[in-house]
Length: 78
Image (spheres, rainbow, N blue to C red):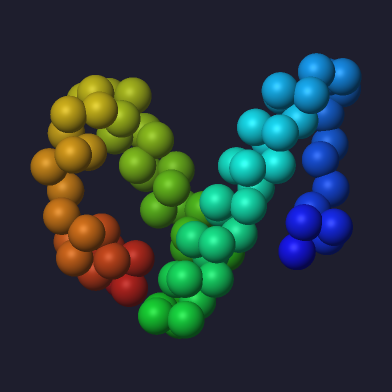
């Protein structure tokens, strides 16, 4: 899959390009994992990630550590 991902950035720094590539690979793997276990759409996944980011901004990272995986997955199923 490494040849499928297109890194779109104005930066010529190889470090930034590698970080973007790794981030894209991680998101791709998460999406495939969720697709195999859940019937979810990209929009629902994006909304769940957005909610997590907003919670992180409002309450800090410690609040996210308290959310169990089962609760996160059940929220995705909704």
